[in-house]
Length: 165
Image (cartoon, rainbow, N blue to C red):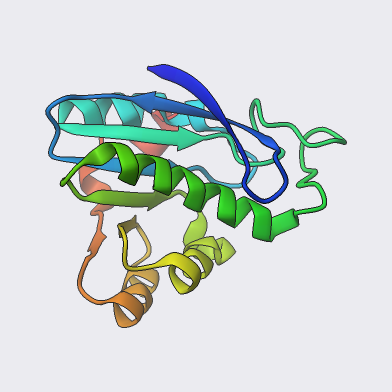
């Protein structure tokens, strides 16, 4: 795993991110963690994706993990939710720039319930595919951007939910 950071194009907030490189690879997965989580919680999942042939990127969202807000955890700063969504899109841009001709897949931990995936699709969709556990969300996203949206069968994820932390 390689740690790196980038400055948010919205407000220059320093965003901490991680890359699990793999060359050659079948594709690139960008993991967007859930609320009250951090990117390294998904390190075992990223290692499993590497083992399956995928390179992985993840970031600590604003006010999460190592990307703390001005007032600590939970403070998204003046940019708020919109800046968080753009920070994720900026990480997708980084992944796209480094991925070559392989597909880039966005995997959202709770993006379907928070509306983050929908907002990303409305603003920036069509450049990437989405993986989501919620069948209703997958159907809604397919209606927006077509068939390049894939459902993960929770029975085939690498870890049982209780053993994930």
